[in-house]
Image (cartoon, rainbow, N blue to C red; front, side, top):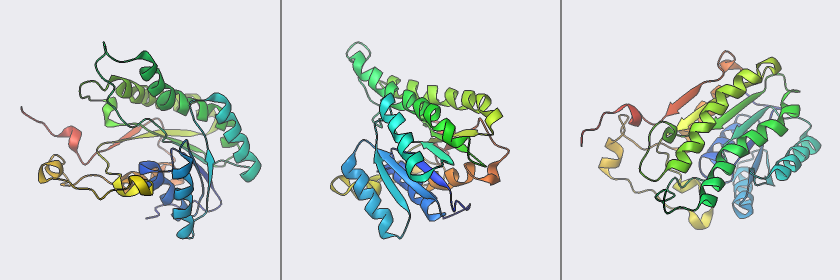
Length: 260
């Protein structure tokens, strides 16, 4: 899977215990990096750590709620104490369920929580990870957004707003951090099947219909590895002339015209 060499590099993946985050973490570890997983689900985090170590991969787990400033401060302090460096920050943590109900029925606390994790969290990680990233020879930040930043279903406005904000934060940080040689890019995943990448008690075998697959011009549902391969490239020296950009990875779903 490795498309770049991350030997002797430290990679922090937020929300790295399950799903796309775990797929990304495994890819960086297979490419030689020491991966620091962080997540609010400690059970999932320990399982993920065991999963990687069973493959003879180098990783560690540090629990953290990225929406809480002091927890992010402590996280970065631990990374510095244990590793002394940070080369890649992958802001993947997020509340994944996009449905929040009708605007007149939802609680504003629900809306605030989604934005706190999905948008405030990446900003906090960038802010407090900055001193460590500045020490790296080739630092990179990667934000995991969503195609819902550009299109929506009903009642997904909190999630869509958070991911749209993260898209804007990506290009803003890219310009702001350019003097520090820190490149900042984003990946916007479409439908990615994460069933096999959940913690054991939530794991399931995907069952996709023909219609599910045919919604995608490539003829299949996405997998975490599809996102991970792009992440390896965008955070590597091979992408040294790319910053402030977003890459949509959705099997072509968002470019297919649908007539009701």
